[in-house]
Length: 232
Image (cartoon, rainbow, N blue to C red; front, top):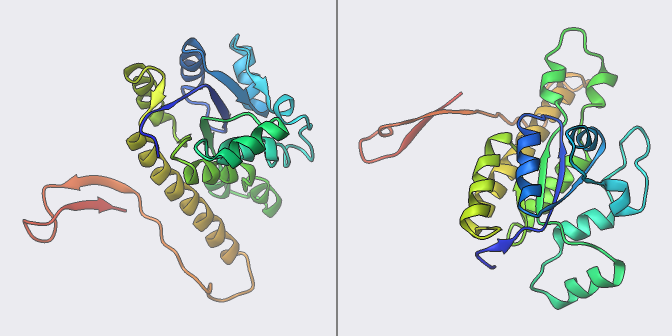
């Protein structure tokens, strides 16, 4: 696994558009091509940027009200390919697949939707993201070569690394972000499963998972020689 990986192409598909435009401009100013989907693409073009539309990358249109847009070999092949394996590189070349070096995705707001009063099953189900978690997991698995971003709070660290490392990201950043990404998809799926359990006929779920969010670090744990933190 290389330490420094050059960034040439980023796929951005975000529900939370906080700081999206400054981040995207930061990438384009550093010569990085942006591929984007749906509402993200519109937001970027409205801001004067020129991202590549996802259907131009895949050669296949978005369909079924956006349910199918990124579930395509041109997307996942570009994310999952190991750049150090000749067979993977040959497969990409044979099928015209372009490498994707950054996957910047945050997920449909399922948690916020189910907290709303009077939300229907249909409304909740439509906020279950499929393509987003798939891309996040693909990128996190291949973090040896791909940087996965799942939260706008990570944008500054990426830009700082690109500047510090001549347009590359470090192995430590990619691993840190992959860890965060897997935690995020696990939390997301656990929330969906808990909601589904609450609307099913089963009295008790077969598996019960609890999610806690870190609040702060402590000076020490139960004993002075132990580390500690507060979650709730």
